[in-house]
Length: 140
Image 1 (tube, one colour):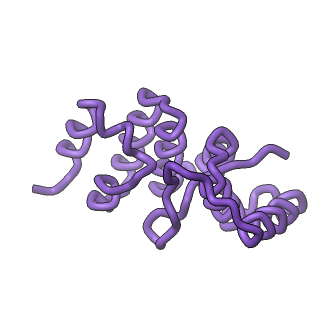
Image 2: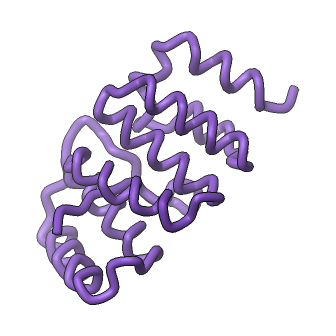
């Protein structure tokens, strides 16, 4: 089962950085939670944890798979759409990232400070649509 994902942004999860984390603890946790998903593949909380761990390990393509699944399971969850936007950004797929970020904002994601600081969105900030989108939704 190929898996991947994003951090739990607002609740203190780690963002992707330029270096993947190599840690026996992270490896252990990832293996454990992947086994849980083999038995309960739609367990949203575990999917989010696995996504966080895969992002920490720099396994962004797998992260995209998990984030797409989370959006399928939680179509109206702003965090799921936000994390999908981050996955696309990490893979330098700006069009899809902007589209998912717009959806996250439309359905209620409002942590604008985090959006502006999130390392996952670093390359998206170079796109003029990023600032335009934030100005459209951010309170004055």
